[in-house]
Image (cartoon, one colour):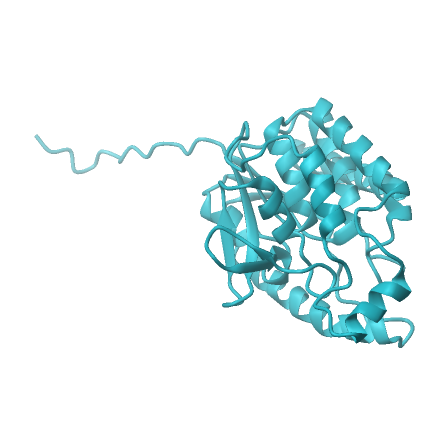
Length: 286
């Protein structure tokens, strides 16, 4: 017997929260403060997507998504203020470029830091699914990983062109910072079919430099392209997906590699997150 007027039963989607960790160099310290506020508010991820410095923070948290792990991350960041994982002084790094070397830094110190501190040797050994993005040096396309040697993959995802060298990975290719192509990896997050996105956004917006220096002018093209790609990714987010966007304010200077800013960034990240979460709860109540 047929029931032509009987309404179709549509199963309700199970809630799924995906945390999105953007790139942002040293500004990534603010993600620690953001995580602290999220943990205290009881907001937990079902999956994590990250690129660049966000991949490092995201991987640590995916291995143990608790406030205790956030506190461990905070201590790690505090430790690198006095002993940054990017070695050498500015003059020596600039000289290395002028002499034809492919990057300011060899990456050896950052590799050692990762080898001594990673919570797991393989990307798949996390408590919740974790996805890391790198940019293929041969195709210019982003590639996503959820398994493989964590040190190599994290080093590749943080390899900002010119600052750190490309890393040879298991696909027999060289890879760079995933943030070059997708600095706020929303498309990957959407592919996981979330009902809610929590975006820990520490990416630098495109701002005309106050001073016309060689470095600031060199960064204009990179930041302009990154900003446009991010705008396109935001436009692809479905309207039925709830978004909690925790965005760090614009930087005062031209560069994002000053580790002395770490304490202030962590504090600012927590304050911004608390404000956004408070407003989000108010919107739900109304």
